[in-house]
Image (cartoon, rainbow, N blue to C red; front, side, top):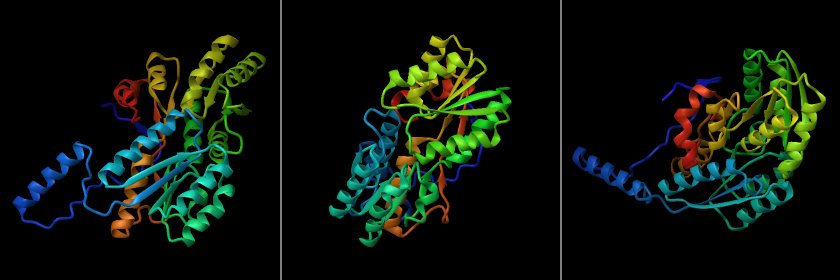
Length: 334
């Protein structure tokens, strides 16, 4: 597999498996073989209690990024003998209500995103008072510790944006559009902030209605038609990259289309040159590690990160890397 260029070191735990039975060297090998077989058949690899963990995200309907996060979380839940509950709502107040509903169910752990942290603060305070451990994931790294979470799993959005700015410099770009598809999402603003910090050229922010792809396309197309100096369009989510490509074609623009996040279409676009580069934050890892770390805390009072976020990105992915990732994106784990 190609060696991926990682802009920052990634601090993350491996996929930890723990055998709880004490035995001789021969018995240990047999137990390990049995554990691997059970895991392969979709059964738990441990004999800890069947705790219930709830993950509540700010995803809207049909967002493939969150399908990947959920896939990772479910796989770890199988291994860790966890009863896994997933819910989502892109309206902050509704997301907070889902967190409160999980608290009312007396779940054993909560995983939550903080895209709009102010709306989530009281719900997380209630979880803390109820003694329910919380791990934040994907967004809200700056608020995670303040809100009482054990740790945060994801990428630092400002650092990711800085990586994009550096990459644009290396490609000789001068005028970039940063397309924000969800107003009020602090992580999206941080990404554009990071781009502005390191990019030697000019960055313009374009706010679009991310719930309507036709609206997104028309907004980007109009911008490219009126400003021919734009030579780079940066979208903040994989589903919007293809829409930006269509807008570029409609406007007759020569701007390069780049994106945050990765999926099968993005990998194909990188390989055929339709897209310049992508920033991968490894959503499968975000889901997997969040569940695994909650399990470790419940089982062994372990907390990873030392008070700092556990980083899953960013990785800059280019045409050279796309072919090696194709199989993973098709199965929905990258």
